[in-house]
Image (cartoon, rainbow, N blue to C red; front, side, top):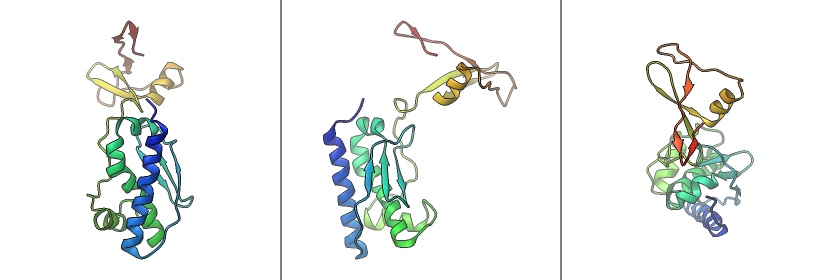
Length: 171
């Protein structure tokens, strides 16, 4: 599911709100960043510091609009603000944590807890001792015959588990 344009606009508005909060707190003005909705995979958002750009995952946004507006957008804006104020620092270091806590009033969590299954499906494989979950990229490499994976515990090759989902095999 792809979000509609109004949701994209809400994210843009929230970015602006976060920058205004940062400006009030720091006394510095920040240019609006370029906001894109082209982040893929399990990552909800990313800040490209030197480009002054924010990227958000449209698939995760569509299913998690509230979490994006409340936490993901401020998290990414905090990266830009930390960069503007302190230069290149640890991504989730004390400067970023301080912005999350003191400017946005949020717990400085480094990872989101969103369900990423739609954005980044996993595929079930098995060996002789357990079940394994492979990413779409690894699964496709196996299907094309480019890679073979084996279990680090029993050293047996991983084989796809086929399951019937609505009359189709899940491979």
